[in-house]
Image 1 (tube, protein in one colour):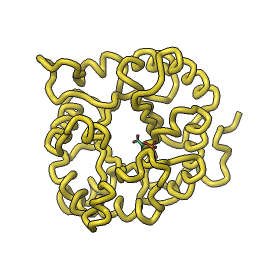
Image 2 (cartoon, helix red, strand yellow):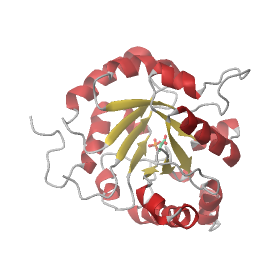
Image 3 (tube, rainbow, N blue to C red):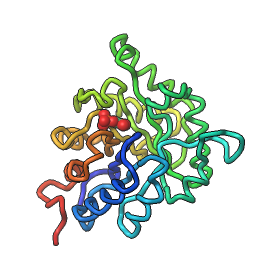
Length: 259
Ligand code: PEP
């Protein structure tokens, strides 16, 4: 089927968008357009409140659901937070850790992000740990230093994934070129290979995120080091999300699958 070393993942981050009825409608449209054998694992990250609705509407389909954040503690006096067990109970299998909007809006540090990833793994969730440099850091030539610091304590676990999301590309329409994205992915894989061993680094899936659209997805997906996408804006429309999924179809295949 595919000559990729690692099975790609297409993740859709809805951020603070969509109500429950809209989530249910979305699931109907997504299921109608989904190929029988999707060329990637597909995961959606709705708001906490829409998780049960979406998980129920997607039950029996290959699409899974995740939380946009979790608390590192299993339970306790943490008003407004959600635990790993609560995410699992609501139907999640995945969780985002350290999205740059969480780092910016909630002051999440590298240490807290890693603690969240560890809590997710301990509970049986699959964390996608988000890393990436700001525009100022890139201009100052600090990209690799920032990435190095963000993954310095990354736990070694086959259930963990990374997402390289340059902050300057998120929600801006300014996608990283395939060369820039692939360079960062190669750096992360090499760095983790040195610390955690080549076999682990070779299996680790690293997604790219930052203004991915149906127009630029194929060029990015063609890069061997890019193992999928974390998509914000374009994931809000099921037709655009499905078009991005088609970028992972083996060349020549009908992305909708054979009827
Ligand atoms: C994101 O939310 O992680 C993201 C990459 O957003 P966008 O695709 O809108 O840039």
